[in-house]
Length: 113
Image 1 (cartoon, rainbow, N blue to C red):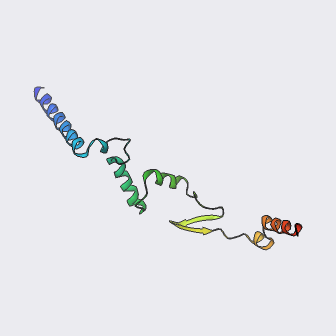
Image 2 (cartoon, rainbow, N blue to C red):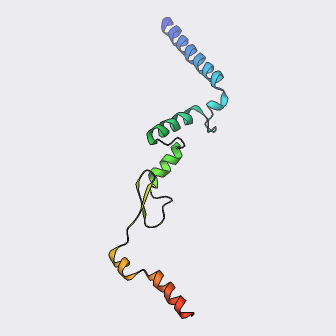
Image 3 (cartoon, rainbow, N blue to C red):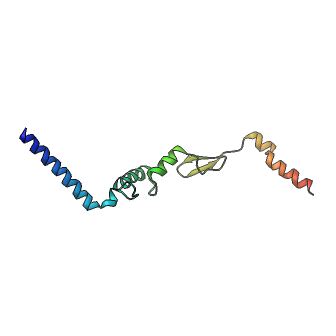
C-alpha cells in the first residue's frame, strides 16, 4: 500500500513537472484557447492544409467549404474541380427562343423609339 502511494506520487510529480515545463517553454498564449495561434489550432490547421493542399485553409474555412460547395458561384455555374468553374450550357429551348429578359429589354427599347 505504501509502495503504491509512492509510485502514484512520483507519477503525479512527473506529469505535473512535464506540464509545468511545457507551459513555461511554450508560454501562456500557446495554450490559451482564445488565442488563434495556440498549439492545438496550429496543429489542426496544419492537418487541414496538408489534406486540402491549400496553405491558407483553416479548420473553419474547410468546414464552410464542405458545407457550402456552391458558395461564391454565380447562377448557372458549377464547380467541376478545385478551382475549376464551368458555366452550365443553355438548354435547347432557351437557346432557340431567347430568354424572357432579353426579349423584354428589346421590347422596351423599341417602345421608346
